[in-house]
Image 1 (cartoon, rainbow, N blue to C red):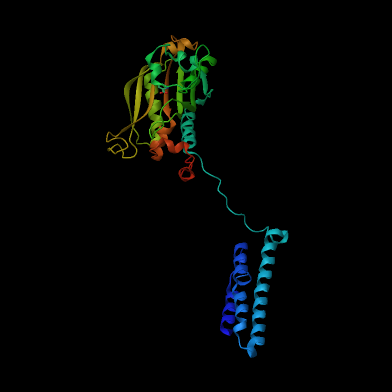
Image 2 (image 1 turned 90 degrees about the horizontal axis):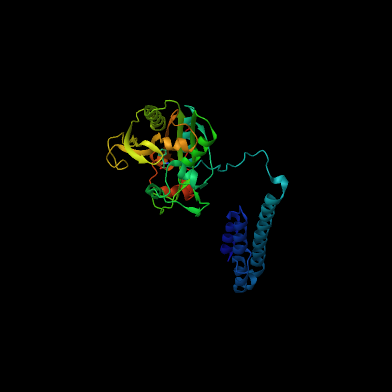
Length: 340
Ligand code: PHE
């Protein structure tokens, strides 16, 4: 019995109480209705009569030891959380996470910076567009099959047709209608297409489209501007190649590939062993588009280009699933730090 009492006494002494939970565990172990001390009191009847008095006293002392320790820590913990004096105002603050920039924002900012440096200014427009700015002014006749290239989310059909814009070329129409050349602008923004969501396609994504209109603007100007962009974005070694293509609003039109920066154009699974990656569409603004916006196509020429920000981000940060951009998974998002 004496041994048991001294064991419990040691346990009480060494029990660590640093928070409310530990305090409660201490109470249950030593002071609760099924506590070890209660059990020992129960065993008192088995003690020979002549020892009862002294053992009884030891047990009482043990209970007092536990009660005092409990009361002392309880007071300490309560004071810590409620008393103003206990707060140390000189302590350095705790760090908190300020979050990180979304990769699409980072790359959009970088693209804008690159074109700002050669005189392009940002223009913005509405995400809900009328037929004129999204299609008709861009040389898509009403039944033109090219309209099928862009599966559109229509908000209102019929006479007052309204839709979510399928590209930011619509913003360029607005700029041409409201400004006189020379025009040198880029329009970044979100666009929408009615596509099934997969690793390679999404129903919304982001574009930056560029437009330059002045006297004597040539295809050579376009090519040089895009080469400058590729080198600024992907490094001095970047090369571009142009392949003939078709867009209703440009003639001639081209698609532009950049040399694969992941394998240095040697061939890898990202560039499908071709050494090239498609990054944008471009061309000389069709005279019909200039005329539709009230610009004299005999005096002025221009070029336009458009790229997907997700695509550029994918190449820059090697992100291979478009869905990651809009899932808000912080494990994905916190990996990105600004490079500018
Ligand atoms: N608007 C086209 C698209 O969304 C891209 C483009 C812009 C192509 C300008 C040529 C010129 O796919």
